[in-house]
Length: 463
Image (tube, rainbow, N blue to C red):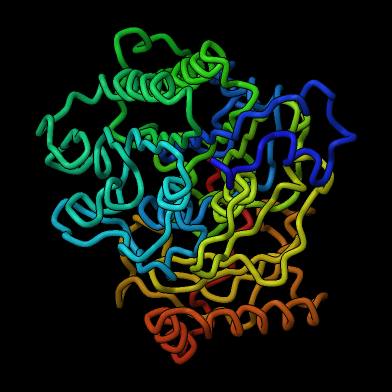
């Protein structure tokens, strides 16, 4: 595989003096493991302050890097997964909402996923777990660059609850308490089969999305109830993956990344962040972010700079020594952050927060601008006139370095910041698909009363 960077090339490119000489001696191309939970909150891991026991996941923070300002691509399932796999905002790739079993559409076939990009350059690729980007051809994982697939094609609260292998349905109603151990067995088997060539394992867990279920080995074992049981079984699964990498001599040249698709739903903790799943406040999209690559990522490092799942594809591509995909990306290569040489990478365009086709917030550096909001919190009874996104006039500005729970609007004291971020946002949205532009025009044209949609309350649920 002549196009792949070895660890020697990777390290020598920027930060070789920081790392041990033994790390430079490794010549194997890098492997990539992306473990992605469903509805796991920012505050649900031991290394983020939880009392749930997660020693194996915590080891990724101990032996690698823990991000405190890491974001999913959207506050709900399918859109966040589309953003992760393509490095593009979900609305750019025509995934504005969650897919259901009744749907026949999915992630468009012209999108370049991490798997398609890497498999085109000699990587073995496997998806094990929840897909949720289309359950029929041509939208299955095997249509998007994954050479094999094993898992549930959508959420575990949807029926029929298929368990699939590649494009075949193995079970119409798979038992929920068997999912995590069966997924883990398949993931480990893929690692063992692929140890002699570079590989990409995408491991999107079904849990802790409801309905919750844990195997007999973990049910009733956590002091935090069934939710704790489920998270502790995921932690066991991570431990099995790490053990397999070590046993097969792959730990030193495999980048392992761990995160979640959005904030917590009915259970779980969003930490000190406001809001939950389905909301464009931080609790809906700020998620755990952990990365380990011995000799490259400094052990025990905490990074407080902004990063998101949109950065995964460009970073994996750069670390594999590959050119970037032809599709314009919204994420950036964050190798300087992973290598510990920079707290953040310079960004010129904002990170956008969407609900459906509606853009509601944008983020650049420490500043987050709320310029639209729905007139209810998600899943609450619809107000008179139905749920709709309304403009915030004036917009609200939050300094997330000082105010991560978005309690204090500082737009009046920072008019230049507010206007600059709003201008950058509107310029960026002008290049988005027609549906996004039409939705934005509709919001701007919507009259609002003095109390609609209202300021963020001082007190809000925090999980």
